Length: 473
Ligand code: SF4
Image (cartoon, rainbow, N blue to C red; front, side, top):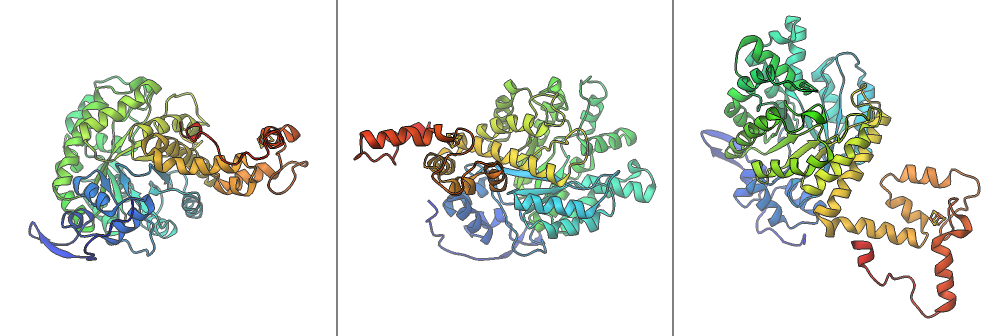
């Protein structure tokens, strides 16, 4: 448990691979038995042996997205994958209709402050290069982007028509993000020309809801050409490998309504993506796969099992999923329900939703609400997935609750600021520990029976629960 000492440490090794002189990646390092500083940090954070982590990186079940050209120092990198804590991603970014960089920077800071593990800049309006640079500075955590949005914005700016972009523009956008230091990029490689043509024939209730997927499909159909991210996938692997940029293979055809869940488009794309992920791994490129979307409750576990069956142990990164379509204004809650089940079934990274999903660009406050909801969902999943580690937090807060240690209970809460605000907001609440709260007052269950027990059995140690399983089960 975290005590295995690697035999040798070599940092930033350089070697020749397939005619390229490249910096070592996490995968090439792991395969050579070399432990990187990122591996040491992640092993410590996860209370995991460095050797177990290294093995996971070798076989692709664990990734540590980290662009070797990221300019910021002190970036908190995370491991994503098998045996690790479920991580939560926060999406921010401008839109074509609303651009306010200060607001996006505030959202980035909220994401860091409230425990986001990764962040994605989804900006598609304004000066994207400048916005990305500022958000990379504001968020010293694992950082992702969607290059096809850059290609789209380039089309609007250069040709006054987003669909006038060339295959080269798709690839240049990806290369630009790699050079700018982003740690991972969503690439919609799985939607082929054949699948885009099927989109016109398959009648879906919710249509196609991936923006990147829609841009790519519309471009292929307009020019009758193959998806550049599919056709030139090997070239992109070589580019990604140079900077150790992780692929997040996008799901352009994810369902946009629970009525479309697991239709032929979604499953066909999933098969394509599984093949591409294995190809990326042949290049020692780190990769994860994106998943839905909108999935009814009874299909959530099946979705994760199907994905894991197709993908092996490649990390799975899901959006929600939303388990109902009726919750506009509360989609962070509707999707956190699906997220908790997904995490329990083995999902590795959750992409949050905010209360403004389907309605508007979120505010910083809504980013906080979505993130907290998802941290709860991730932890609830971890209580099943990595129970022995995750249960320590619940055990500690249970103890502080039973002993009316308000200071500790509030500090251990998912959002201590909010717990403190609620606890102290009414007149009548006495300050300090060992006092009831305004809910039951003198009928507090943590005072009445323990007091009686003390009177009846003065020598019994009432501080220790007799049956630890009461908490653990
Ligand atoms: S007063 Fe009621 S709600 Fe408050 S701590 Fe005691 S039992 Fe819990």
